[in-house]
Length: 358
Ligand SMILES: C[S@@+](CC[C@H](N)C(=O)[O-])C[C@H]1O[C@@H](n2cnc3c(N)ncnc32)[C@H](O)[C@@H]1O
Image (cartoon, rainbow, N blue to C red; front, side):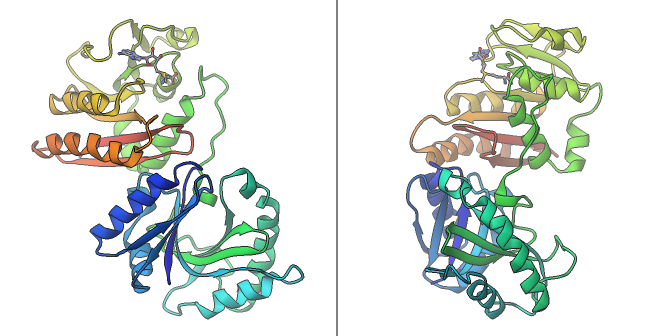
């Protein structure tokens, strides 16, 4: 039985499983998810083997909420012999090679869990020898080709791996589906990384240029101590920072920030409108989504990037419900919007939503 493998944050397997089941059904692909809580991945077994490939071609990681990476699995190799793990894996990849597609890159990966991390060094070494073997067998380009098919080997134990492939337009470009960032030492909180990752991974370079214009205006709801405001100031935007807490003094010294100790639910922009609304308030998702809708519908903001906090169990259902109401309101407008929802690497029990007006 062919399956689709999805990587996720440990503890989010049920959410990814629900999402994959729902998205697969929308594409008329049926099956069932398999996972153990905390393992950091989900396998969605398809009743019709051809559906795994169909999902691999149609379901882009960027259009899902909880998947970090999606791989079409061709086989699971158990009990790999300690003295030669390479040959069975190599043979498996060669057997499932598709001459219609060029294999442009190889990814040997593991789950983002404590057990998975123990495999990291082994995976790196294994990738070197496997890459050589695949190139020798004309099964992988000599120069890496990001536009080619990706060959994936996902180790769950030293002697067990899932072998598969991904399509260029649907996979995450990052190893293990994780976008790592260095904490900027001048930023006042680690939360800054959430907005930075959102900007760099959820917006195309053209969208980044359009939204983060030098001299543009933004409102930051729930701004303190200022990690998100830091990202806006770093991009030379004027910021109205709304929070009863204390904001970082260095940010205030930039001359680009005005701090208002006000309630984010009743605050309105100083000049009637802003280019961008960002919001990281810890509040119920449906309440935040409704507020974001008010700003976008009334055009107090052109675009919005915000977090929905998800401390509850049924995260996928909560997100779907909160976003359904907001999306329905936006659909009644003449404008069209690009909406993305992602559980980012730097997010905790929350997801990030970007809504850009076109
Ligand atoms: C997760 S923190 C924000 C961290 C911030 N984004 C950063 O990067 O430093 C949430 C903030 O929301 C603020 N907050 C919660 N409810 C609020 C409300 N109704 N109005 C304004 N701020 C609120 C809290 O005071 C808190 O500082």
